[in-house]
Every structure is written in structure tokens, then in C-alpha cells.
Amino acid sequence: MQKPLNQAFPDRVALVEGEANLTYEDLEQRIGSMASGLLAGSSDLQEERIAFLLPASADYVVALHGVWRAGGIAVPLNVAATESEWEHCLSSTGVTRVIAADEESASISALCDRLAISLIIIRDCGSDHRASFPALSPQRRAMIVFTSGTTSKPKGVVTTHGNIAAQIATLVEAWEWQREDVIPLFLPLHHVHGIINVLSCALRAGATVHLMPKLDIKWLCEQVANDAYSLLMAVPTIYVKFIDYLRDLPTEESRLICEGFANMRLNISGSAACPVEVFDEWQQLTGQVLLERYGMTEIGMALSNLYRGERRAGHVGQPLPGVQIQLVEESGAVVSREGVPGEIQVKSDTVFLEYWGNPDATTAAFVEGWFCTGDIAVVKDGFHRIMGRSSIDIIKSGGYKLSALEIEDKLLAHPAIAEVAVVGVADRTWGEAVAAAVVLKAGATLSLSGLKAWCEDKLSAYKTPKKLVVLEALPRNAMGKVVKPSLKSVF
Image (cartoon, rainbow, N blue to C red):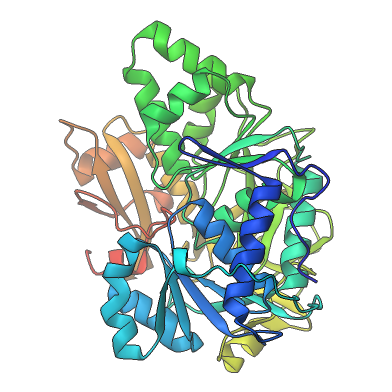
């Protein structure tokens, strides 16, 4: 069932929001009030879908756990999404109520009116009368989080209370979460990275979360210099922002911040592949060896480099506790030796229940109980390296299967290139030609002939880009992942 938050340490600080501190006891009281208000005299919400449009805040945590405690299904919305994106989430899941703060309510009120959905301001949700809460089995649906939609229209991924508990338990064990831990939370809270990896693991461990509605690099670095945090979790693009910021600071100021990062017990990178160049630069600057891991909305986290042991650049490590992994070739045969690429398939209590209202997609996602991720990996010395998604990042060119991620990693070392995305585009001769979309560093120029010349001793000829386009910015989703399907038309 959905248990109260960590009650062993009621006076410990659970959340820090601006100048305000909420203890675990404070938070538990607010969650109880929220759940009672949502029930409004009923005994169980019976998996009613309740969405909330809230930034990283105590209100967000109270809404999430309040919906769970009352027996509803939580549907967190992206505060930065468009109205059409909200409409897809709300209408496809049959949401009946939306909880929002004052500022966010203005942007979604017209949509709620049009869809006949009740819009509730969060300050009006609580109740002074404490209700009796339903007993919830692990099999009960708890949350619907939408996929990134990089390959198709976003699907609503349904996780149960048991799935969520398993996702949290494997990370608390693998990354050795402690109640003394303090972590900043600036990641979007409509994806599992922020919801599970940071917020839920911290609250399960009795740790402290510093809530940041918006990433402020300068302010965050000041806190780091004061040794405010023991952990950091971010996407690669944020580590790049940290690196650029630190490089531009006066030497002594940069040194103090780097020491603060060095004093943390763990820095984790995820949600997108971390370029080896970024991995190496972060280690040179801070002494921190980034721990890279692999997961998906549907499975939580599945693979991770070791907390105590080797962390290999460009690799996502080994199966997490309680997670089974197999690689499967296109023929359907299970990969039996290292060095042979195959699709990652996962079996675990962490794996989601279903795609909401889409039984065909749910059935197609599984083979004999294994969830088919669509991601291709290869294993060396027990460590998995992601080659990319089978439909996007594996380029079939001239009889070769090429990893777009590997090529991107090499191209990022070019002195003119700030960002790069590699895709395969239809080609009469090659089947698919390697094509690179790049964002250049300030004042830099780059031609295709110049790029090819630079690649001569760094990439095999069949991996060298045959097409090049220079863009002002790469199209990205809320988690910082490049939306590659939209790039193909550029070529």
C-alpha cells in the first residue's frame, strides 16, 4: 500500500523551498490534508486520474502523494508544454481534475473548460477533517507518465505502486542513499528522472531535497561552494553548462566551486548519452567520475555503472539489483557472447504495467515477458555500451551497422563544434548516408570538406559524415534529448 513518508525521523528536513523548510512530519500532515480533501467524504478514489500542473515545489510533492494516498492515479504535467500537448495528456487518460498553482492555472483554465475538467487551485484542496485512507495493493495503478515522444506520439506509461516501490528500492540499494544526503532538484517533474531517481529515492531514504523550480547555475554553484549537497543528478547538457560556466570564472572562484563538487559523494548523469569528452572534462575539473546509468519511462532504471567500483566512460554499466537484462539479435536469437550488438530486453518488478488505453502497443512491447526497449547495446567486460535506438541511432550504410552515438562522440572533439546530432538519411548508393547536424561555437565556421578532412584519422571512411548542415540550435524535448526524426527533413 502507499505508506506514509519516512516517519522514523519526523523532525528531519524533507524539503527546502526558498527560505522555507518542511520536516517529514510537516510534509506528512500536508499530504494527509490533501488526500482527505480529494476524497471529500468518499473512501477511495478508485484510480481516478488526477493531473497536476505544478513546478518543483512542496505543493508538487503534496499533490503527488496526496493523489496516491487517496487511491487515485497521478498524472504529472509538463509546466513548459503547449496547450495541445496538455490536451493530449488529459484527453487520452480521461483526467477528471487538474490541480494547479495560481500562476499555472491561468494558462490551462481555458483548456479545462473546453474539456469539462475541474480545475482546482492547490491551496483550496486540503481538508481539516482527516479521512480514513484506502489500503492499496502493489498491483494498483499509481501514475501515468508520458514518453518523450521522440519516435511517435507520446504514450501514457502506467506504473503500479509495486513498480514504483521496486524502482526506488533498486536505486536506494545500488547508489547507497543515506538519510544524511542532500540533493538539489531542478529536473523536470513529469519524467522518472526527477520523480523517481531524485525525489522519491531521497524521501524513501529520509534525505533532504532542495527544490528549484528553475535551474540557476550561478546560485547553484554558490551552494556547491558552500558544500550544501552530497549528490548531484543531471542530464549531460547541464554538465556542459556547468563546465562552460566554471571555465569562464576567475581561477579562485572556479577552484572553490570545483572543490565543492569534489566533496560530494556522487555525481550521476542520465536521460541522454554522456559524451566521453564531457565525462573527461568533468573529471579534470572536479575530480568526480560521473556515474552514468540507463533507464526508460517504462522500466525506471535498468543498468548502472558501479557506485563502488569502475565507472567506464561511454558505458552504462551492469544490471541493477533485481533487474534481468538480455540482448537479442534481429534474428530473435539471444546474444550469447560479448561484442555482438543486440536489442536490450528487460524483465523486472520495475517494468510498467501497460500503455494507458493502448492494448495493442502494450502487447507489441513485450516478447515472452521481456520488455523490448528498442535500444541497441553491446557488452564488453560485463559493461553495456548503448549504440542507440534501433529506429533512430543505428544507421545501416553500405552494409555496415553504424552507431550514431559513437560518431557524435567523435565529432564533439572538433574544435568548431559545440553540439552535434547524427542521423541516417536515405541515399541511393549507401542505403542510408551518415548526416551531421551541428551547432558551432561562437565565431567558428565549418564546411563539409573541412569536416571530412578532419575526420580522416579519427573515423573510418564509412562512418565519416557525407552530409552536413549547420543549425542555430538542435531540436530538443523537455529532458534535453534531441528529437532526431524532425532533423531528417533538414537534409
